[in-house]
Image 1: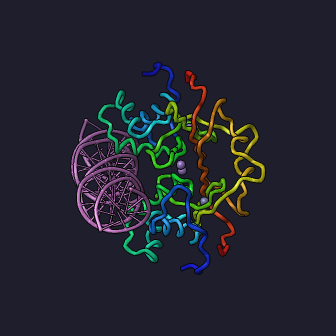
Image 2: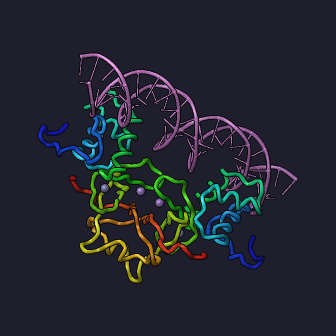
Image 3: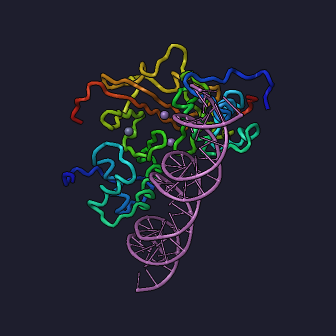
Length: 141
Length: 141
DNA sequence: TTGCACATTAGAATTATTCCAAAAAAGACT
DNA sequence: AGTCTTTTTTGGAATAATTCTAATGTGCAA
Ligand SMILES: [Mn+2]
Ligand SMILES: [Mn+2]
Ligand SMILES: [Zn+2]
Ligand SMILES: [Zn+2]
C-alpha cells in the first residue's frame, strides 16, 4: 500500500503512538489526500491493522485533532472528514467529481485582513468551505 | 412578542405561505437575530402557533432554504442554525457569550479574489465560520 | 512481575434529522 | 357550500454519525 521507506516519522509530541494511532495517522499522511471520513479511514487502517474498531478510529482522530496533528473538516451536515495538511487552507468540494480540493489564500492574504471583525476579536479557529463545479473536469490527481 | 405593524410582508415568490411557514419565517425575520436552531425556532413558533410540530419546522426551514429566503448555518457538527440575513456574510461564534455574530467582508472584497482557486471553478455556495472570543465582552446587541 | 494508567473494543446510547403513512388544510371548480 | 385534487402537517418510527460504557487488553516502571 506504500513504499517501505515512505514513512514520515510518525511521532507526535506528547502523544503515545500506539499501533492504531500510528496507522490512523499514517493512512492520512501517507495515503491519498482525499479527506476521508472515519469509516473510510477504518477501511484503510484495516489493511495493516485488521481488528481495529470504528470506536478506536474515532478515538484516534479525536486525539490527533486535539494535538493539532490533523484537521477535522465539515461540509454542512455530512460526515466529518480529516485532513493532514496543517497549513492554513479551506476546502472546495467539486460536485462533479465528488473530490475535495485544498484551497489556499493568495500570497500575503490573511483572513482577518478581509473581514469586518468586531474590535477585540480573537479568532481561535475558522473553517472555509466551498461547493461548486470544475467546468473543465479532466484532471488526473 | 412583536409590534403589530412590524410585519415585513411575509411572502416568498413561488411558495405557498401556510400559517406554519409564515410563522417560522416571521420568527426568523422579525425575532431576535440570534441564529436559532430548529428546536429554538419551534419554541418561538409555538407562541403564536401552538400545536406546530418539530417535523413541520424542519419542513418549513428546508423549503425556505430552497427558496433562498433564509440560510442554513453550520458550526462543526452542532445543530444547524438559521439566518434571515441574505447578504453575503460569515459567522463568528463568540465562545465567551455563546452569541453568533454576522461577519461581512471589508468593502469591495470578493471571496474569489483572495483564494487560489483552480482554473474553471464555479462556486455555488460557501460557508465561512469563525470561533473565538471577544475580549471586551460588553456589548448590548 | 506486578501494578497501574492508559488504550481499545463491542455494543448500547444519544441526538439531530429524515422518513412514513395517515389526517388536515388549501385551492380550484361547480 | 360541496366535491375533488394536491399539498402540507403531524406523531411516531427510522436513520446514521458519533459518543458513551464497561470490560478487556497493553505497556511501561517500580
Ligand atoms: Mn450549505
Ligand atoms: Mn472546527
Ligand atoms: Zn485539507
Ligand atoms: Zn447570519
